[in-house]
Image 1 (tube, rainbow, N blue to C red):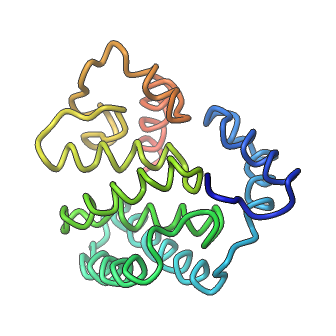
Image 2 (image 1 turned 30 degrees about the horizontal axis):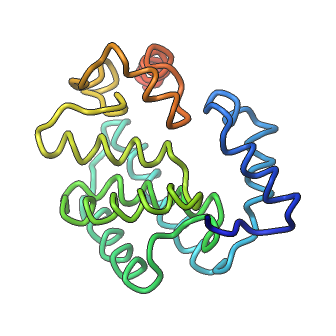
Length: 202
C-alpha cells in the first residue's frame, strides 16, 4: 500500500474518508476535510501546474456550454503536458500532488479524447494507483467508461452520457448500481437527475 501523507492517525482518517460513498464525500465538511488532509504532497509546484490547467479546461468547457467557440488546441496542449508529467513522475497520485492535483490530472486525461492510446496508457496507471490507495476509485470508473465508449463498447459504470439526458449503453445495466457503489459513486438514477439539472441550468 502507498504511504499516505501525514501521521498514522491522519492516514487512518484518510482511508476511512476515502471509503465513504460519494454522496457523503461530496458534502462540504467532508470535502473540505479531505482537501485539508490531502493538502500535503511531495510536489506542490506540479500540483499548482495541474490545477492551473484544470481551471483553464473548465473555463473553456463552460464557454462551450454557453454556445461559444471551443478551442481543441487547449486539450492538445494539456495532453502534451500530461505526457511529459507522466513520463517524468508516473501517475500523479495523492502522494505526489494531493487530492486536488490528482483530480486535476484525471480530468485532463479524461478530456484527451483525441489520443485514445494515451488514455488507455493512463487507465492502466490509474488502475495501479487505485489499487495502491493513491487515487480515487471513482476516477478509475469514469476513465474506464470513457475508454470503452471510445472503443465502441458498452460502458460499465454509466458515467458517460449522450448530451446531459441519457447514459450511453451500459453492460449488465441491472447491476450497475452495485458496481457504482463499489467505486464510490452514487446510484445511477441520482446521477442522471444531477446531469439533467446541469442541462437545465444551461
